[in-house]
Image (cartoon, rainbow, N blue to C red; front, side, top):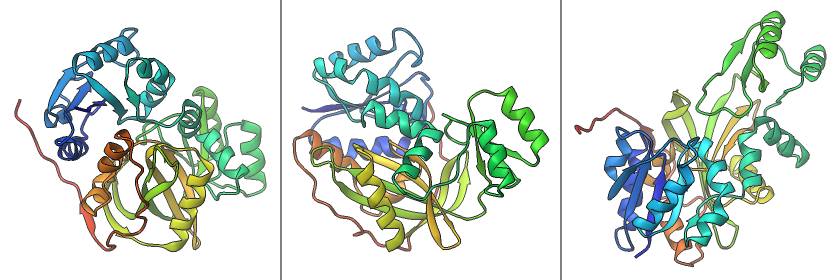
Length: 319
């Protein structure tokens, strides 16, 4: 038996169901969340309600549940929890539990928009200009490197929370100095793309890169998308994955601007639009399972069929 725990499952019903489907031959999938009405709890083989991740008993509660359910691996589905689990990875390892995450350094870099930008620039990977120092913002405006409207967003935010469109310098200055830890980026009027990638936990090599054009967004997640194949985008993602020592599933946002792809954000976890990749044959759950069993996955990049369109819709569960 090799039981798996998925934490902070929230609304990720499809992802939990995919894991249950791939895990039924080797063990059970246990879902946990601080909210007992989180829909994805009820898609798992078993579920538990846990404290919020800022509770002092959070980690000890998870460890106790790992012992009770004989968990061998744990995986989070939301950004804020990634750093918490990664920083306690050794403690879980001492209890026989593998944390399926990249290193704390990689996670912290990805969750910090300014740090992500600086690393990408250093490695000559095209990305969205990002500023967090007022003098740098003024200099960029003076040089016309950026111009209004601009986007102001939390430096470590996710799911498009707290993102503001700023129309002039007066509004920007008031916002920038009233809210700490903001970054400023140009308002990009380009076509947005999403990438679901998997980096093998044993070889450290990318084994899957699924690219899609985003047709519609809702609450920061891809609501509708069409699968595409583009050599320039795939090559850019390969270069990116070679620079970051990622582990497991990666969600990457990009824009096409004047014929060139640029990186917008990197999320070292399953993305909300991942079901499109799974339904197209990019089975990351199988990759996770095989890695945990000690097997290296063979690369299968670009073997999916392009042209399929994913559309999300609402459903319900009666508890």
